[in-house]
Image 1: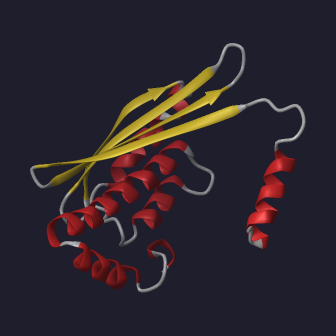
Image 2 (image 1 turned 90 degrees about the vertical axis):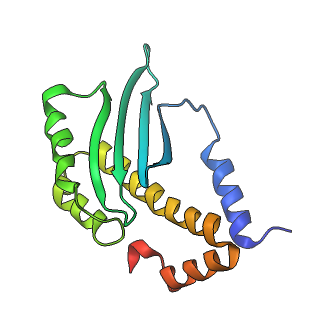
Length: 167
């Protein structure tokens, strides 16, 4: 049995895909976190493909290193293929302004200050993913080292019934 919201979504999706459709652009984002010597090494990559003849790809990748308090200690760009050269390089250099910023205490605010409302779109998308992955890795560490009950309590204390990003 479908709820009204599920039925509405099903109808909307069927209407959305009717007719002659072709893919115009696709985006693939991959991210991972590795813990090495007490630091979190977070890698995020994004590939945008414009489906034309021939296809055009834009590839961006960044690596960040966070300490145990989720303070960004180092960040670097590892790939900028298909970028617009001199237009994109200032955005690359601007990443350094985020070093020393802690996830959960103004990371997104600082990112918006650095990139502004009309600035680069690629690096902020990667940075949001990076911060989320670093944050979630801490949740995973609580589960791994302290168990399920501690994990549940940690989540309740942390979220206080609200999304962390919107408190």
